[in-house]
Length: 168
Image 1 (cartoon, helix red, strand yellow):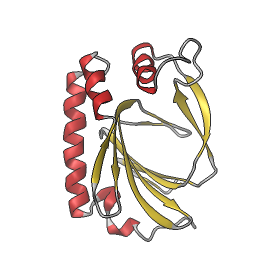
Image 2 (cartoon, one colour; image 1 turned 30 degrees about the vertical axis):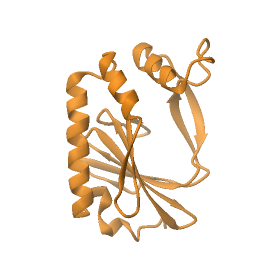
Image 3 (tube, rainbow, N blue to C red; image 1 turned 135 degrees about the vertical axis):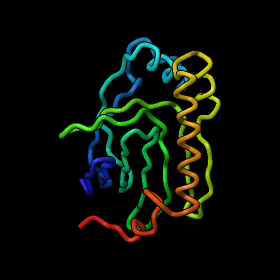
Image 4 (cartoon, rainbow, N blue to C red; image 1 turned 120 degrees about the vertical axis):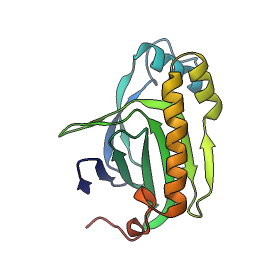
């Protein structure tokens, strides 16, 4: 843990460390399904496996109360790569874990601030199928707008003060 406050938790994950994540990979009967269909089925049935995944790069994770996204800053061998925005339900923080639910949509944010959506068509399909509620979709789009403002103003997870942060 890097910082814990009333409304924010910042955690560090070093390259090679093992994290436990819910995954639809390896769930019996889903082998022939596309990645998108596996995601939709996981949201629909809440059937998943817990898998251990080694972190490929060093990352800082910004979990914020009531917010519909986790912002992740990434480095490889000390070189800043950019940010990854994972849109998800607001986190529930426990002493030993953080619980949330992925909402399909993601964004890649380049070092220069360029914003690229990831899985937009899947997000729209999840909304169409009722797997992401209309209210959640509105929250996600509002969250994206807030994050773009923070990025432009270099606040929150995008603040320049984080540029020089390294684990001690």
